[in-house]
Image (tube, rainbow, N blue to C red; front, side):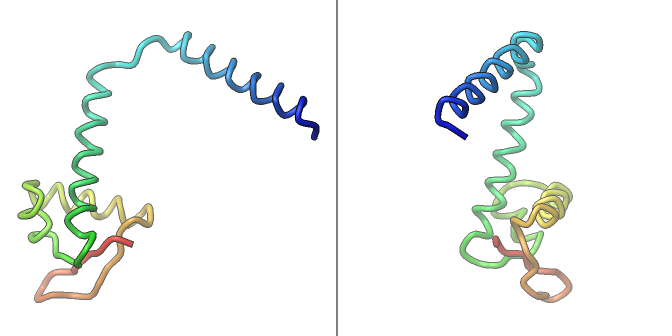
Amino acid sequence: MSEDTAARKGNYAAEQIKAARARRGPADPVRAEAYKRDREKQNAILKAIADEARTVPEIAEATGLTTTEVMWWVTALRKYGKVQDDGKRDDYVAYRRK
């Protein structure tokens, strides 16, 4: 593929993205805020287990989230390969960042 063809394909893709955004309209501020809060929770959990493995109650204490929220996020983060089990501590599984 020549550089000219690649450039045209890149421009076409950019034009398609612009057109889709124009059809969709501005972003919903409520959704944008919810997405921001979710990213903050995810990042807080990943930061809490970056240096050492922790259990769900330990992560909850470090982040200020409830144990239910932490368990939900840890499950999702495991599914997407960002967190892994690191053995058991007492009756709890410890998790660490991959």
